[in-house]
Length: 331
Image (cartoon, rainbow, N blue to C red; front, top):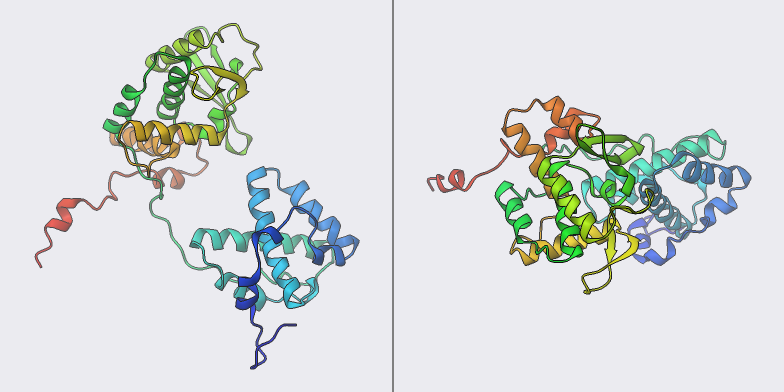
């Protein structure tokens, strides 16, 4: 075990020596040495219980990082104590929310080890996280006027421009998450008889149908005509990646990263802040509807939030510190 002159574990020094390359996809050495129970618990946790790939990736990183550092300290799984977990969290140079996520990953992972009798007690269970209360989301709001400015700035003389306008239109007029937009298929834009709708597979596997307003419907029809996708296969991607700067589209679907880069490029071309992101449209849509007096419950349903407190984090009406306030300080 690594110790300082005073006998205390120098976890800070060990942490600084670990590189991201050491946090690999393979089974951690401590788990491999922990026997069949540890290996089964590891696979059950990451591949059986964690179905969301993003959560799995984040939790795996946290667990691997912690176990690599325990390995460097010469600590086996049954020897991990709350002190090791606490010192690990204290040594992280990251945000409050990231530390909270790391602690959550360790708690759940060691819970699985307890169930499989690899360890007797969960060393992360008694470690308290930092007090951190979010009263407003971090995502900056683009604002109604700037959103309109962005839409009108997009050139629509080719299929790529029409695609980009349609994607941004969906982000604005449905408050959909960018991941749900990237997963849209041709069959997900359809006529119900009295209106057109978009069907989204949203976060957590939620299935949602949202009506398409008339101007967004026009954007989508223009895009489908220019891209010659009107009669395409139902399972084909609704939005396809661009073929370089040719103005043509490929047969491949756009990814979340493709949409994020496209939005950044369009924001730059329109002279808008680079701090904005695809999620900024969602913030503006929620705030705009609440400003108009739409009930919170209806806005919550549109945004697909399970808890109204989440919807309130998107509300920028009453929590702004305005220039007028700071100008009135009489010092």
